[in-house]
Length: 292
Image (tube, rainbow, N blue to C red):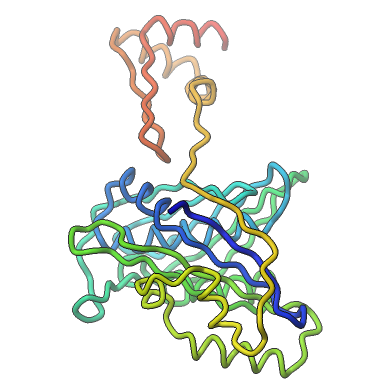
C-alpha cells in the first residue's frame, strides 16, 4: 500500500484535520540513513510530521524544513518536505544505542534529548523564509510539534505520531495525525476535541491494528464528525541532481577544487538525503575550475 495524506474538517467547520500513513517513506529513510531502532523511531516521526506540515502549506513550489537539535545521541535531525508532502531527511548519527522506557517501548526522548530546539523554516516563495523556533518539551517530537504550533504560530494543535519498529529492526508501520482548532471555535468544540483525543489515546496501537488514517481521525474527532476533502499520495523523494552537486562543488572555491584535481583520483560525492553517488573525474574537476 502506498503512503498517503488525508485532509479534512470537522462537521462544524472549526477543526482542521490531517492524517497520514507513512510506513514506506519511513522505511526508505531508515534504509538510507542506516538507523538503529531508536534512531528509526525518532527519524520516522520527524519525517511523518514534516510530510503533513509540508502538505498543509499548499504553496506551489514551497517547502518546509524542520531541524531538531536536542543534545541526544542522534545529534541533529533534519527533514525537508515539498508542498505535496514528499519528504527527505538525514540524521547526524544513525547508529544510536537501544534505550527503552520499559520492555518493548523505545525511549525516543532519550535518543533526541531535551536540551535544544525545534526549528521550522517555511519557504513560502516570498523574499524571506518564515523561521520559527521553540525549545524542546520532551524530545518525543509530537509534544514538541504541539508546543511549536502553540508558541510560534499561535495555533492550538494536537499531534500524535507513531513508528513501530519490528524485532528484525524493520519498520512495521508508521503514521500519525495533526488536528488544529480554527479561530472562533466555541467551547463545546474545544471540549469535544479534547475528549476525542484522550479517548483515542496513543496512535501506535491503532496503527498496529491496521487502522487507516481516516479511521484514526474518525475516533479522534468523535461526536464532532469529520468530512474528508482531499487525499494525496506521498513518498520519500530527494531532488538531488548532478547539476546541483556541481554548483555545490564550485562553491568550495578555486583553491580546494585545485587540490582535489591534483590528487588525480575520482572524487565521489554522496547525497546526504539519499543513496545517490555522483563521481567526478580529475577532468570533471578541471572543467568546474574553468567555470569559476
